[in-house]
Length: 103
View 1 (cartoon, rainbow, N blue to C red):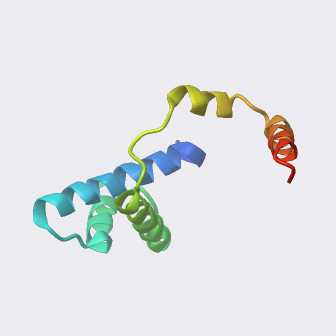
View 2: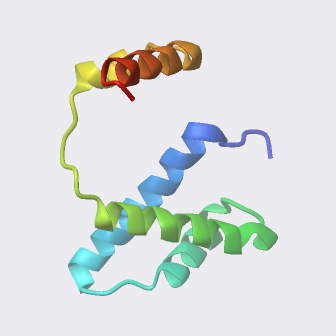
């Protein structure tokens, strides 16, 4: 393979396939994720046969996450403010906030 998806790109790809499964379920009323993912893998050769079960499991988990998602929106500005903190800064901010609460 000349190019591999890893990290967040891999997760985004799995979420995209899970969304596709949700759309299929919305059209037909039911979904067989194993069948759908096997067919997608046969067509696009996403992973080798030995990794197919892992792909099916990951997409099944992503599908369950999307199907059970309760939140419909989040503050973009707040999210980017959160992302701008280093792990050390985030821990320090959490310590400060807990300290202010007397925890």
